[in-house]
Image (cartoon, rainbow, N blue to C red; front, side, top):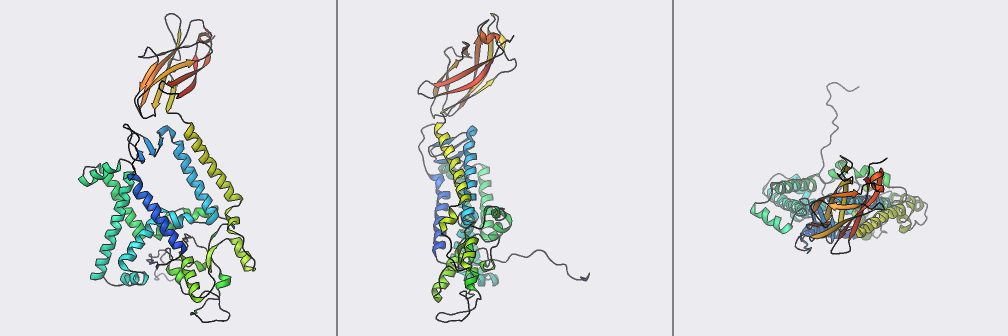
Length: 476
């Protein structure tokens, strides 16, 4: 029994700072390239110019909230076309499932924004304070002149990166050169400054201090990934049957009965999550591959075979332990589960492309006026009223003709127009009231409901769309 005077056991453990050591190798090089490409895309994309004409913005990628449109080079998405955005989100989710099923947490290890910006912050930290041992020494020493100088320089560079991150984000929502000038002159909207401040501070905190804590505690994906992986998923593992029993070994030495692992701790020292992969799969592992580079470098120096730590599936582990040749990488990548994800992903993508090419530059929405459902004129004519919303997506002012087709011989009239023509300004929506009339005693007048089709055609091109609705008569 615990004594009542004993100190209660704390369930909280303070974070131990992690100082990853510099490493060279194929995976580290690939991460550098991915970081450069992704950051380049993020920071530079808002500055790409794209001429769309006098009535449209010249920014290649723009989320125009004021006018409720999204521009992506030649593509223009309107609010009612949000299904394109939903389709892209579905494709992103299916792509994440696909890559996780094939190769584990490759998204987390290589392309996740938290990983990319943390890599950038560690690069700055290493440049200012030195490699692992120098950073550990600086962390442990008191606040003298050297520590204050290096920390101030490091934090200043981190804040500048965070400021550029927040600035790049808001440039996606308005014209980048104009907003940049307004920001410098102090005339930008307060929301722009507030957004930049929030993103600057969160990038500074997440990339500089929280780091692996975000991946372990804040991100839900480590818990979800288990459902996406199976025994054929490639993931990073330690070949303990080859490495154990481990022990110290120097170049040129031979130790009988000892495994290939010399317990140099290189795999632990380079890990940005601070884990030991030799202890098996762990929730914190982001499969970044740096431990593979570190271990391979050690194996090269002591003259042992590479890939003591490497990508491997559980089915390969069983085969390798038995001395058999593991299956090929492609047999793990292309299997029923991943093929199914690929088919679904491609199906959504093809559907979006087809919908993109089939959509018209005219968008029409018809709302019948139901109060009352019909009006009887003085000469016995039955009239129905419709409100038509016309959206011109062509980028120039257009004139549209409105007509009706029906087997009942209905007549169409436009409110405020004698020739059934409507002019709609570029990139705007116009509401037009339309009257459809049936002559006294005609089939449509005496019937309860009559099918009809309203047509909207661009007089300056072949663009033409229709909307099916009904005409309400007196009934019997």
